[in-house]
Image (tube, rainbow, N blue to C red; front, side, top):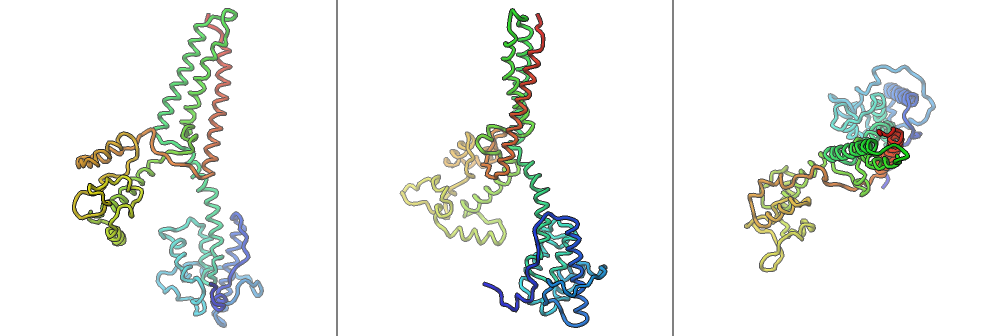
Length: 400
């Protein structure tokens, strides 16, 4: 539903803006236009009547003037801490659409020291805040959007892809280091043994030395993949191992979920907002309505009726969902048997396998492209090493 015409007329509206990569020239031009417009409005306000409701998109009547400290955003009503928010805003500007939303945006993303302050250039930030004093159209934030998009594309995204290029954790990386170095040393030792044991041609051909090439080549590629933090087996499944911090977050979320949902009788120790949610859950008398995925694990009651919440008795679940493996199955067995002593071993029972840990599917096409490039690099490195190693062992003369 559109705003009334009177409210729409109180804000200048859309400006001529073309999205492009930020440049010093364009930034300087925007700053000059903003300061010139602010100075013009200030002079008009002091001499005749408030001009905030006029359309500033017209270039007629604009005159160049020198800029000074009076145009600083410290005097903007959006940034002032001592004066009321609308101290220097005219009655017409109070009726501008999206003014309250604009003030919330400034307080959240633009104000220095805010919890979610954007890493904007001070010039761009001051320009946006200055323009908001007379224009509340969302297009005022386009320069900030342009700047943040440029930072995201040139800084944040490359760093993220560099971090996501590794699809294994440190334990498996060390595992592939050990396997690769062992295979490489075995290939080198086998090549030395063949060179020392076989006589010189024509009694024996040097082609027998090529038996050491595959082992050495595979070992080199394994060591190279470990150096890149990459595993071809995990990549072949389209997965990546979960990071340590992801595992910790999952454990914390699982603990909170199962303590809140599957133990409704426990005393709540959350904030007031979560206490209301716990009380709502306690009113539901069926586990299947709360966690359908866990209903299959609920032991059927002796009388054949559906399991329901009751004030007495043990809770239905004393464990988090199993993560797989022998330890998880053993923990579940002890849980159903009612072994309360297993609770003390909960962290040990759910210890993550250090090498073959849990994985997740890679869905981002940019991460998939990075993994394919690393796989090609590994094959290229293995090919050139194999070629150089083959030439080396064939060129060495026989020992006897």
